[in-house]
Length: 550
Image (cartoon, rainbow, N blue to C red):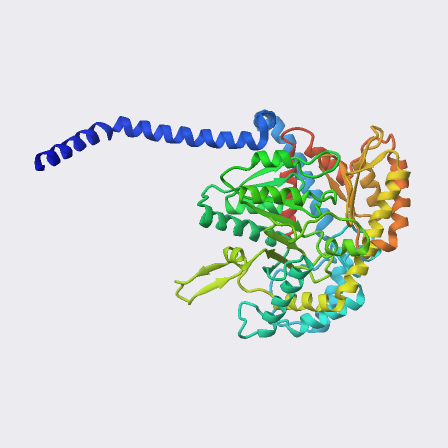
């Protein structure tokens, strides 16, 4: 028996010696790398298709050739000159200049009085075209951006924020009322979206809500499913906050095209993109570009079938979409009543009229929410725990949001929904019936209406630039080129004026050579070549740099 055991050990050593050679180990590593990248390639092809992948590779190749050519001295000099001019134009538009402009670059030697501060703010407003100078948003000609609930609500918000101006939810023992109000904001939103037993947290805005959801689903998938190379799948029309979350959190992202007519994400192509590394899929109600909504019921079935998360982005739909049905406007199921929905983002600072910097991310249950938290138990300063990206947070914003929701009430939000959506539907109906050269993108369900040109003699970006000369601030869109207006309470009084101005703009743009307005220049550059987005990125970077010129 002992001889047999000895022989066995010898045989094992001989086998191991023959097997664990350098050449064999090298082959194993090579085989592992090849298989891993073949799997990645297969998943990429499954998600994007052979045709789209080939187009992406070709465009990437052409882009690199163009970018290489742009490094040639004479071309680079020309491009740099144009970029410098663009930067100068941006600075001239955003940064006040002249002998009367006082720049406060160092602390005053002595503190200023309140009267001096208010007078200086008034003077700066006049110089920059702010509230006392060029008060655009109150005219009702601004698409979205300012979701104004009225002067009476302003007074309510100011009073609430002033009462809790120094509060910080990071210290709930010191500010227990803020903790209570934050929990009640979340509870009210959960009931609006039909999940009273769910969970959530407040955030600084829609982007943070979305990034937190990405983080939550990533960590959940890693813990529950063992996924270490996470991927998520979103419609091409989804908000770029998902791309930002992908970039920050190391999540591979797939963009699925939307149907050219319905503007809904192609569910069949999205299903084809799901693989063992998928952590979540996304649908919008409503999307920012054209105001359409995805088929949440179909997406939820996919989420259930494959055991992945489904985030429904209601940041823009916010306090409009939960009230549509009762307001008399049809809408397909989209909230937590749909089995398979795991998270919903809702901006209280949009159609909820709360002060800017206020949003809510909601989850189906608290078990999922715990993956959003960050806890560091071993810090020298004690146990550190925070629910979202920020540590310290302004409790005054929570107080302002809570006061807004109490002041508006269910009936106030219902009436607001009815008037805003009626405004949007009136504009949509007028464009469909009275503007034969324009077309509506999809079938918008709420407050946003997007329209493009179906006439070769009308450049829709030129229409946008002409509307700008009439005081309107519309949003320009890509793929296809279009404009949109996000109607607000301020827009409701300007409905007929918008239609009349749009008629004049379309007439003036007909047959006109494209000018040098902002929309024509910027969006024309973006589609001019595969390298166009790189040039637009440089201009956008210059814009961001300019924001910090004192």
